[in-house]
Length: 263
Image (cartoon, rainbow, N blue to C red; front, side):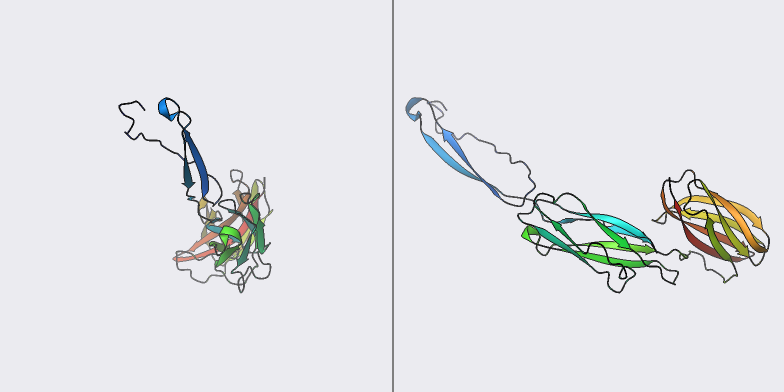
């Protein structure tokens, strides 16, 4: 400031950085003058930094579990709580996850480990139907800033005996006996029986239902013990579904089973 502009306001800009907690921060800035009649004159300004974080549970939107198998997902907190937070899991009662409930059924997070993902294991029981099952798990938090915060995880239990198909299936005496070896690393064979001559093809899908291979095999005659070989060398490790499509005149049948690729 000069003797000519002493009464003209000058602007000070404050920039607040992000942090991981949920508390407002209060700081005191000290202004100290020097020169002229202002030497040693102080002033103080209290600055409140208003927190913009929201307490939330960090979970995947959806998880797919093969029927008769297990799958995991991780849970963490969006920011550091002021005290321990407990997250409980519900929604499995009366579903194919009920026999072996999610493990563990509750998780505890501290102000130190809040951001480290904790693993939940899901185990899906096998059933006798041919449909995928849908389960919604609810995670409910208690403690600190997270009291009452909830999140949902949509769980699809992928049936291992066959999936709904887009085409209307006419009942046929078609038997799919599975693949061997299973698990496999490079190739595997599937065996099937046909009640009449048919055109055979195989489609392989991943756990999300995406087609990763389509394999036409051509014509096969009536009989038992037919086999075709599946080359899985280019597939990464994981669980896949193979669907045998049988075309007999104007009739179509599909049979599906699961296989595991291990590297």
